[in-house]
Image 1 (tube, rainbow over the protein chains, first blue to last red):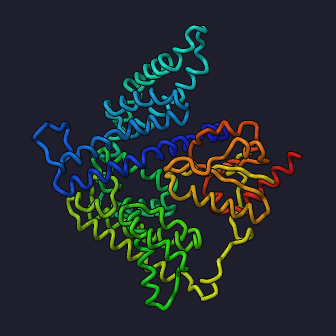
Image 2: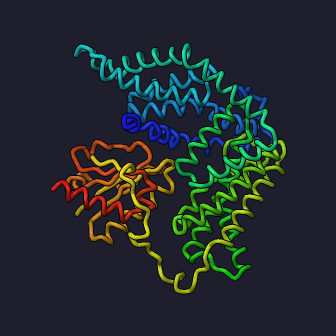
Length: 369
Length: 105
């Protein structure tokens, strides 16, 4: 177990995802706007035969198609630093052409990174060839070994596994869809864009690459609805004559809610941190409800990001609207009900939690060197 | 004691900065000097100088991802945790740093 922990597989994956997110966001917006205005993502832009919207959709679509490559290069870089980048690209592209997709990209990234490390460590070259090491030997040797492993060993089973998973999900009955959507909703909500959310994101993005759009739609609608729900809770609580936020928190909401509409959930984190259990409970219940509604009604955005901008790309936008509304209202209602009323003193005085109230730190979570 | 540290989370827009803020607050409350660098999506901010690092008694790294220029801290006492630990339990983390340092001496 300790050995496995030292490898820090999750850390490498998260590092790669941190490079991936801005591309998903930027490209997601491009394709969402393009498709929202009737454009289509095309294989090739032939002069004179496309509109501005086609161009936007194609820019976004092409960039999103490169995600397996980005994740492979990112993981490989995280493991082997700069020498990992070049073979990461080659092996990631190989994963793409062999149909191993996003899972192939992830595996390819680890393969590439550790191979590059091994080449650097074990391949001894004479002094005159030192300069060739980073420019030729590492990228060539790593790419040829890793690429061939991808083509002949990993590629086929991963492609088969992916299509198996795809088939299974396509044939889910309505009650399973309800549960699946609910689970995605809970998982994506509970850590507000943190590691759990991003791991689920990597998984559902894989599914979208296979043409299954429901899960990622559910996830992003939950991310969209959560901050908006926090905003609505303010007004709902007023109905019960409750003040659930401090003035600082209300200020935070003024930027968190607009950010929420375009799919960025992180804005509410400062509010969550002040009252973590109640906030997570409300988010999870709302997310489960919203995710379940979204998946069982078949909300199927073809883009992986965009918040309300995802709606026009759905074959049935009302399914998405319903999912969003249910999620927003449930989250807001639960928050308004369970959050404590803030008295005047509490609002004025800055609450600072002392050490006693903090969670204990597990020895396992700390690495001292 | 003098603490330097780096915070970096996956998305690099929220946890990074909350971890920085919480750790700074907790360390100051306990009477320590602290300087936290952030490596967010926007890039490195509040970059630590070589001097600050050389003078520091201990390094706290609150990170979920690979850090840039980590070799700067080679040979120092380092405590490494995930960002959410710094966010949830900053005071305890600072206390832990005190303990680690005391053990050494």
